[in-house]
Length: 104
Image (cartoon, rainbow, N blue to C red; front, side, top):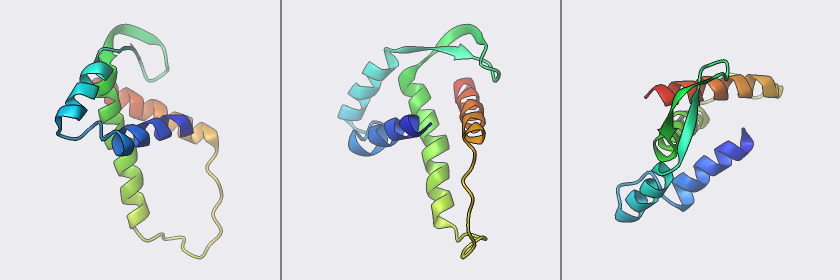
């Protein structure tokens, strides 16, 4: 999940891939040339594919904007010791986000 978020951040920030510019449009054409196979929420393959650029743009909106809005809100647990979230929860969240993004 960390590598996927790093990829999204790099595309969004360093390459500005999701902006309205000629360079971003050219990059999206290249990314959309990559067909990603589809899977259901359980990870089982289903017929069809999705252009990688469209998938990454949707995932960026869902995952990066969600994280950004979370950081701006004051924490209800401010001052308390937080516990790390188990990796299985992040994997489940990623599967749901990816399944949601593939339906758009």
